[in-house]
Image (cartoon, rainbow, N blue to C red; front, top):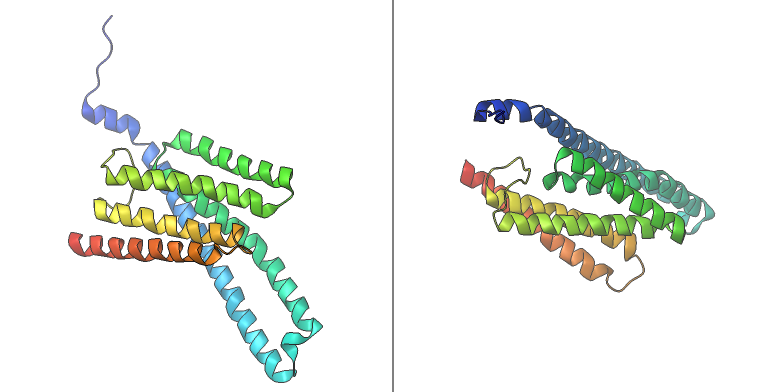
Length: 215
């Protein structure tokens, strides 16, 4: 018996259900990222107002025990948000390269690696650093594949210039987070920030340039 043949339209109909799932994943990650950045922004704004008010009301507030307690409280509030933001940023990367099933496996593997290294080392920074390093390597692969014109990558833009810009922009975000997490007391902190800033600026410029070309 001959194998059943399918027309291109029938094959597209079979593959169509995966598209809504991918779009829902992208949209959910986008909402989470915006929400986390928003809550961190609100916390920073309110904290700035509080310090300004206390500095005018209490002489030497920045040298007092109350200020130290304030810093500890702000760090305790911000830490879970920053960890969640790092995780969400890491999950944004593999979706460019992997199919839906492979994406789930890769995401779970990355989270597991970070958690294991955290438990083994006793340092959250080590676990987050390893997680971000893997995300960064995947993002480098995405940028290289985009430059070489590889097929199968998932982007919102059809322009290669915009895709490369998006890849560099994400890589800049990951490099920033990696520098904050792993280079706090290292002389490489400033060079890390400079590299991250360069990637972010170039990626943003390429993304906006691509929009102008399409327009």
